[in-house]
Image 1 (cartoon, rainbow, N blue to C red):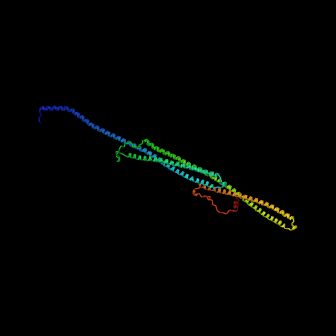
Image 2: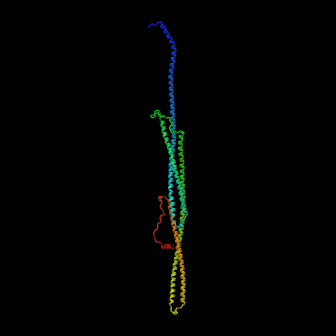
Image 3: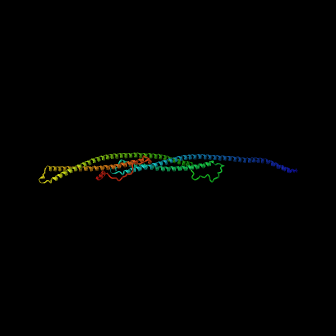
Length: 436
């Protein structure tokens, strides 16, 4: 080792002394600074770890809250979907029930054509009555009333058909709105369920452009709830109106059927009564015809006896005339007005008186016979009218059997057509026609 000079050693010693004096505070400063710097990264790291954990917890809670909100929203939408499902089912049921009721009232309305046709047919048939029988009787009044009742029933039923059609349109409209709302709920459920199933590991998640924007047409929860509530309330109101309408239709059908049945019974009662009156009148005319024919036969027999007596008296008168005329040829004094002459003369006068009386009686009998024949003609003419009216009313009764007998079992009991044949009239009828 090289030797250092003394002065240099002294200078170095002084320098070292100074350095040692300065080293202690410097060292303390360095130690303090180093300790602080060591603590600063540790504190920053600790703070960073704590903030990361806090943000993770916040994110987890936010995600949990939103997942809970999604589940609650799904439950809310699902409850409304089930409500709409039930309402749609009830609406479909009510639509089917009202449609069936509408078909029923249409069938009833169509069935009213038969009694109307029958009533008009009866009125048309009875227009063929003749002479004195062409009267406005209770049957005609009841038939006209029946036509009015049927027309009124058809108007009421037609009104119910129109109301049912309008109500069906309203139900269909309400159902369409329910269906539209139901489809929206289904789509919303599908979307929210997809959103609920997503997580950070899902492959189809990505950043979107401005996802926090408010889409056009967005509604508030109150509006959303009110919309579905309005749709269900409207559907329920229409179903209630439809139920009331079905009850009104059933009541109208029952009332119209009862009114028509009551009028049918009244009309047929009047017809049966009128038929009984015609039968009674016809039987009375038949009895009068029988008595008149007997009187005619007796009078004709009397006329034959009168004619026979007159013929005999004429022969007696011829005999008396011949005797008187023959005795006028007696000669000279033999032409004497003796008792024979007076007797023959008295006989002639008596015969002439008798013949005159017989002729008078014969004329009177002939007049009486003519009167009887005219009376018989009137009776038989009236009988013809009554028989025609009786036939027409029986046809009406037979036609009205369509109202109570099924169409497939209905067989007319009275021939609808009147048939005439070319036949020779009896001498009695010919005599009646000549006298008429």
